[in-house]
Image (cartoon, rainbow, N blue to C red):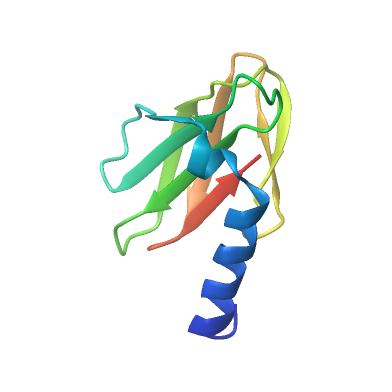
Length: 106
């Protein structure tokens, strides 16, 4: 986004589109990249509405490898940037993240 206001507006819009982030069950996802906080939110009553959030809390770009809690293979869309990422047949997701970058995948 072009400004802090545009970024916060985008976050609020996406948050409102994803009630599972407020009302679903959340769990931290394990991985080997210390600077990245990964969270899975799901709602057993709303199948297919899961959201996985990734936040790089460091200034350095990183590569994150996650075992995803979604049926594999799958294509997930980053709700913040619009890009698509692939979960392979083994349920593994590999993404490159910029310093202080965020992804909300559904």
